[in-house]
Image (cartoon, rainbow, N blue to C red; front, side):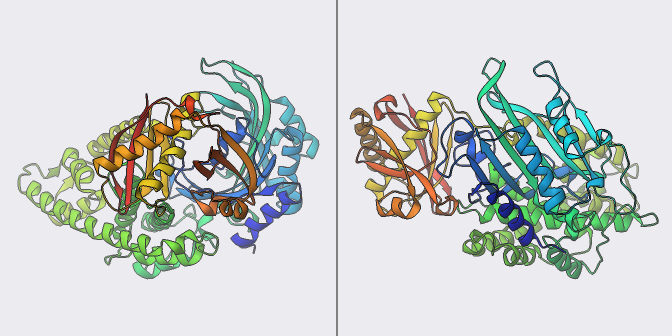
Length: 597
């Protein structure tokens, strides 16, 4: 059996041997990309370099990136989907292209990991009104020995940003995950037993703001290989939750619930109760792992009703509901959180640094939700007293679920005790409407894509450097950036400070920034090592994310920061800086919103 630690290292070593420089995982909370709440792919931190900026480590890169995706949250519970996952990734920034990328993918899976080539199939782009069918990629797979019957042309095999930027077809290796049957001779992409284990995005086009497509000046490769799915495949497992990434968590859940996990939920003769138990255990393990990693980021996200905090709250409460469904009555989320930290901190030390924060917030949130459930129980008792026809309406069941997070299964249990039924069809109709509205409302928040790289947003990015240094001058050198969010209309900047700023302090900060803008100072970039940068007085925003070489941007003699860029050429380009709001973001963290006029 290959461990997750071994597989992670094998991937990095393979691509190091093919000239790729190793870069660390970026934080889960994106720095300057307002199009997403979380880092959903390894490409997000590399946006400037995919757009043409030069990366200090070179044009070939590799890493294992922490990712969170909420779009598939309803799929979690099967054997392959996850909210938090690790994406093994490598990139070519204007270096090699299709033939080298596809050949390396094939050699990594088949020759290096020794996966069965008879269980490998691939999808390629089938063409649309914007670009032709990607026959070149299909021919490359054929040349490597993949049967034509194992290659499927799919119209959806196309990646592009939300509005404009580099884009192109992609090709996805799939692996037959059903160990009980032989892989079919013909590849059917709709058969869920074919599991996607990788994806080569072939960025050969550029999309403009008016929706047109042109050949890209810089052609890029963006590879994403799922650690969890590949680990299951290489170990001959049809279930990601049977790998060493999840087994310790499942063991704790089994102990707490006094129930057993059954690895396959498709075995004939297994009861619905066991199917539901398996699904619930997977959801608990997945959701608490995701919540722990989000809270474990150094920015300090905690459960709340907005943005990333709302997702953390939803994950914890959904895990709690499923815990109660399988018989866990005690407060348990912190126990699983401790197991997650012990398991993953050797790879991601930020979990150890923030252990107290993670565990305390799990305990607090569980207590809050327990109190909410009790309120829901009292409300249900009141509703039951008014029922005349022996059936609890879907409206009542949905209101309990939506307002109090009251599980439908608990409502069913209580209804049975009172010899009542519930209108499940009416509830399901209401629930589906709610899901659709939620997806529509949050489409902009949870989508993937490259961040806005317009000239306005670049100026705002530059302004955060001036703001950061001005805050350090006014409040003290202990001030550190905790996060930022930039659009082409405003900047949002989070920083460590435990007091509300006075009007005088805000005016001082504004005046310093505007003085630097008025001086029209040059903004220069140099490449150096992290140690040399810090010795020269450069400020690092998130020290653990840097590779061996970094870019340092200097604003005259005013500020010096490690940053990926891009930036304005001079401060005079920025315009007039104005703070429009200063408020608390979280414990010990303040937030400034500002505009350039």
